[in-house]
Image 1 (spheres, helix red, strand yellow):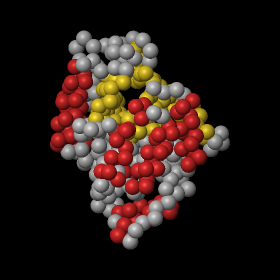
Image 2 (image 1 turned 135 degrees about the vertical axis):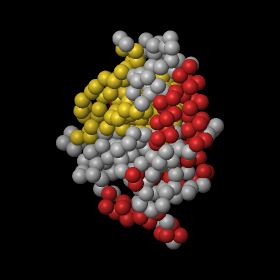
Image 3 (image 1 turned 180 degrees about the vertical axis):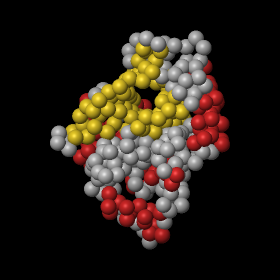
Length: 307
């Protein structure tokens, strides 16, 4: 059985200098433009270049991007992000969900998420399901426009209902289910101003039908939380901004190389942390650990991994 390796990156905030029209000055984009004046030195293109090269060097089968690729949700930013993703890897090897900055204000589909269709492939709506090597990558859209000073997320009853159906079907098919979204499902990961408003509803779905792993961004630090599953806790892993210089508010750029494999007692994930080093001007190893993943479907011990 060959292992399945994938990269988890988030909150790329690709540097972009906004040129706002007069009407745009009276929207939330203006607040983000003022914020960018303070943070433009913290999200660097050389770190993003090093990130792309480090991912290529460490040979992953798939790349997961959990939102906030843009800063202002401008159409030109969606185009810029599409070019960056195209250079990173073929589209069938990337799965992407949007973050709150990608939905800062309402954006017509053709000028926003429609430009990213190659990486969401959400033709049937959210959540999407991308299947690779016995793994179901299930992408949720928690991004929606919010009033000024808020960065909250929302999934909604329709998306949660469909998620429950997808998780049940993929579990019964014997696939490892990895749920990806921008906002954290656990309490306390971020403040109320940035929280997923219906995270209790998401956790109720996960407790009923299960998943093996949840990946998200949005928090300033890497973290691991757990939420209840049908039998065993489900690990939730977060990476902070994968482009940020370490500073008092941000842990600094890192990404996770995740290797899915069979362990003695079922599926395991080996988490390799890759951290940006200002001294080396590159990403360097920063520890590793293994996680046992919960399995809840009778007769399935993860034999489909890598098939």
